[in-house]
Amino acid sequence: MKMHTGEKPFSCNICEFRCTLKSSLPSHMKIHTGEKPFSCNICEYKSITKGSLKYHIIKKHTGEKPFSCHICEYKCIRKNDLKTHILIHTGEKPFSCNICEYKCMRKSGLRRHIKIHTGEKPLSCNICEFRCNTKSNLQRHIKIHTGEKPYSCHICEFRCITKTNLQTHIKIHTGEKPFLCNICEYKCSRKTVLIRHKNTHRFKGTSHPPSISRIITVAVNPSTTTPAPPH
Image (cartoon, rainbow, N blue to C red; front, side, top):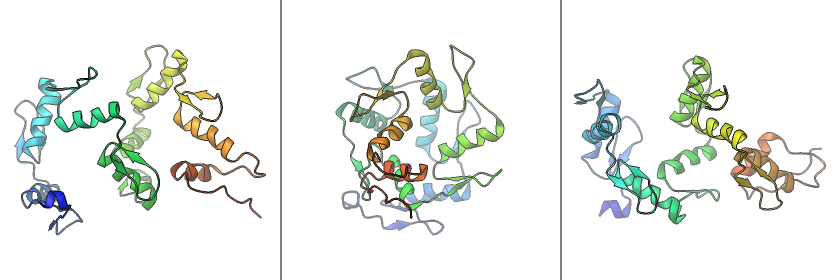
């Protein structure tokens, strides 16, 4: 019943974690103790939960993908991943921000988005003062220090830190421009470039062009009004 009401009566005495089931709390506590009782019999991987170990074995060793989409060729390891994938076809975005109009398919995506509003940056680089709100952003940043560029173009010598940057680069060769302006006929290969372009429409006629930070604010919160020119 608690799963339906959203009630989470069990809480961690170290952090703010709360859960519905008492049985979920011991697994969480292992994050703090560092205990990883489940070991892979093929490699040195260890995990906190049996489920995590099972996922690791399938992903890294067996390659098995038992769940498949009935619409396209997508296959995955976990049933929940398939459910999320299906939303791509239905267009459904069940998780919405209560501050702005942002919607997404995953609860984790919403949690990441909320940190834009709160300004929370709990993760920090151990080399410089960089801070961020997601593990993936921190890993990407660390590569700046290491110089690692694991993704390379198969057409030219371009190398980059992220897969997303490589996909964007490839569009230079293909000429693909998937991002379209809904006001004029402008097309481009990057979403960020489209945001900048659309703001030329939004701020058209103002005597002072907006700052980059202002453009980002408007992009995150579309309800933000056009700024008054500075005195």
